[in-house]
Image 1 (tube, one colour):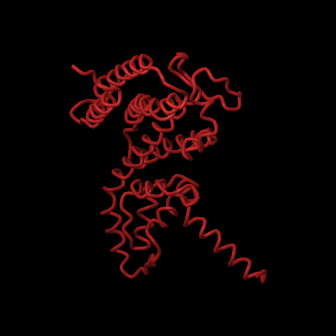
Image 2: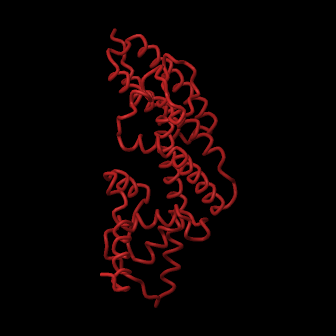
Length: 288
C-alpha cells in the first residue's frame, strides 16, 4: 500500500483539527486535548519523512523551510493560541469582551511591529536573505537572529519559526476579528432602532467606494482616535455605516481585500487623502 505524502497528511490533519476546534458539543479543553496531539503526531511524521528523503539542492531546502515547514508548524502555534484566546475570555459584559478582543489584537499588532523587518520580508516575498534564514547551519549575523525555540539543527533554520508565527498570528487575527463581528452583530438591530428614533437627523451620503471606508475605519481603530483607543472595531464600523448609510458587511472580509493588494497600493485611499489635502494646503497658501 502506498504511503501517504506529507502534503496529503497535512491536509487531512488540518481538516480534522478544524472540525474539532469548531465542535461546540465538546468543551474547550476537550477540543484542545484532542487537537494538539494530532498536530504533534503530524509534525513528527513530517520531520521523519522529510529528513529521510533529504533535499536535492539548496533551492529545495529553502523552499521547504520558507514555505512548507512554517505552514505546518503554524498549526501548532495557532491551536495553542486559539485555546489561550478562547479560554481567557472574560465572563463579564459585552463591553469587557470587546476590550479583551481589542487588547489581543493590539498584542498581535505589537508583535508585527516589533519584528517589522522580518514581517516585511515575509509579506513582500523577498529572497535576498533566504540563504541565511532558510538553510540549516547558516551563520547568521546577530542583527538577523530571531527567536528559535527548537534546538534540532537538522530540522530548524533561523527563519522558519518566525515565519510560522507570522502565519499563525495572522490566522488568530482573523479569528479575533470574526469573533468581534459576531459580538457586534447582535447590537445592529438596537443601533438601527436608535437611529430611526432620531427621525429628522440629516445623514451624509458616502459616494466613494465602500472599500475606502474600510481603510478609514481600520485607520481610526488602529490609531486609537475614537474613545481614547477603547472603541471596538465593530463599534467604529457600525457608526460609519449608520452615519453614511452604507452596508460594509463583515470588516474582516473587506480587510482581506486590502491585504491582497500589491504593496504600494494597500493604502490607496489614505494616500489619496494625504495627497489631495497637501495640495489643498499648498493652494490655500498660494504655493501653487
